[in-house]
Image 1 (cartoon, rainbow, N blue to C red):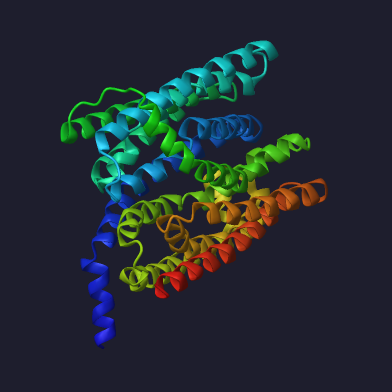
Image 2 (cartoon, rainbow, N blue to C red; image 1 turned 60 degrees about the vertical axis):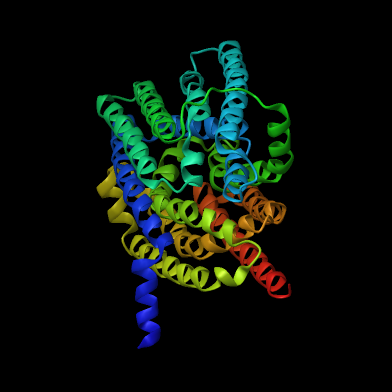
Length: 419
């Protein structure tokens, strides 16, 4: 009885849980609107044009990593551990990212015009290059570091509502650029709002580049950058592989199926974002967060496991209900992918422990194992099974990543206990 009371007290009084709930509420609302936008786009564009939109979005996601450089994670840790002054770090990161965004945009323009704008994917890539600047201006990470969850939730909602509004304007397969433009407007408005929210609390920040500070941050971020790149490959390489292996026609249906899994990402993101500053402050005493980590892992695993079972049982009807009869063939993809959810729920907590304990290089190795698994299985399975092979490769990669994260978190706990 006492243990039940303590567990209930953990749920309702723990600040981490309140932060997770607050951020989840906003992210869930934003993701719900995004899901509606994707459903509308898939129905109105058709599987082929929707596949082109997904392919352009995937390529842009890879290029955005160059803007981000993994700086957010290290900056949050440094600020949480009082290693740097927050305004100076914010101004330097802003200046650095704006320069990188300008260089990337010039490169994309050159690429698109050299290969010709008759290609639908090239046109979308050209439009989406504006996202480099909206991403560079975003002050999401400093608000996360200060645990200001409400502005973050509102910004996410604002961004996705604009994207949804743009999707409503799409009426046929040739109007995918309208959705891309709406996405840019939404991200820009969110960036402006976060800028205002930060400046109203901490004063106006002018972008500049502190070479020494950026140099020090970059010296620590390369493992994070590689990890994020590998993580992106783990989740998005399937789309690139299908395109490279002349299975482009299957991208739309596969992406629609995978969207049923990523709809739960806001919960994962909210958990990660909320616990990371607290875990960072607990370093190097693992015992301070041991019970919290165990309880959150249990809650996350059970919750996402139940969601996965529901998707498995109703895969076909869910796809038809959301996207239409044209997407029914993705049911077998979704049934395989549904097993990913409990795996993600279980390893979310352990991965944040690894980062908080300054083991980003270990995380890079873990992600490399998972990404290699995904790439190898894609190469082996896509020629024979097409997009179904992608589903199995994604599941295999998640299993590898789970065991690697659990092993690393256990090593951290052992090392901390021996001090």
